[in-house]
Length: 291
Image 1 (spheres, rainbow, N blue to C red):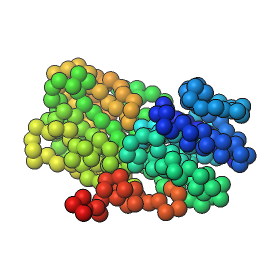
Image 2: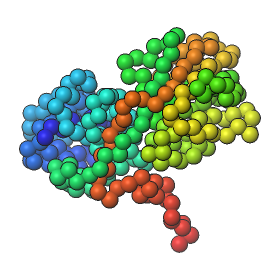
Image 3: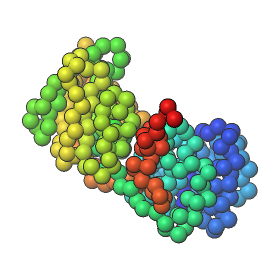
C-alpha cells in the first residue's frame, strides 16, 4: 500500500499524534510519500527516522492508494486540488477547528489506520463545480469542492449580478456578492450567509446572495444538472472569483458558466461515521444546553 501525506502547519499539541501516525504507517510497512513543503515543516516539528519520498505535483501521485490530509477543512480543499481527477480517496485527520471534512480526531488515528488496511470504510463521493468562460482563464484546475464566490474585488461597494439557468434569465442580485455552493459547501460560507444545509448525495447546488440589498431575496436550491451563468457589473472594472481558496480577477460583464464537474472527490468515511453524525457533533444538534 502507498499513502501520500499532505498537510499544513499545526500547533505543538498535535506533534506527538502526527509522529505516531507516521510511525504507525511505517511500522505497518506502508510506503509513504510526503508533500515537499509539508515534509520541511514536519522535519522541524517531529523526529523522522525513516527516509520518506516527496511529491509536489499531481503527476507524482501515480500508484498512490490513499492520501491522508492533516489539518482542517481548508487543508482538505487544497488536497482536492492536488488529487484532481485521480479519484484517490482522502482521509482527513483534524488538527483544525470544526472539521466537517477532516473529521477524524487525533484520538482515532490508530482506528483509522486499521480501517484503511482492512478496507473497513465507505467512500463518500462529493461533487465539484466546474467554471468556464470564453473571456477568462481560471488555471489548470477550474473546479471548486466547496463553493464559487463572485464579489467586488475591492469589497467597498455593492455589485449587480445577473443570473441565468440553462440560458433562461432567473434573477438579478444587488448584493456584496453571490455564492454558488455544492452540498459539501452548504456547511461553509453559504451557511454563514443564511443558506440551507443539504446532504452530500442531494445532487444540488445552492445560490446564496451575500448581504442582498432586497431582503426578499433568499437562497435558491437547484439541481446540479443545470448550467448556471453569471454576469457582474458595478463601479469597478474588475471582480473577484474565488474557487474555494483560489482567487482570480475577471473583467466587468464577463460571462462565467458553472456546471457539475465530470468527476468526484472521494472522502474516506470510517465505520460509524456518517453525515448526520458529523453534523450533530460539529453543530451541537440534539443537545439541550440548559441541561
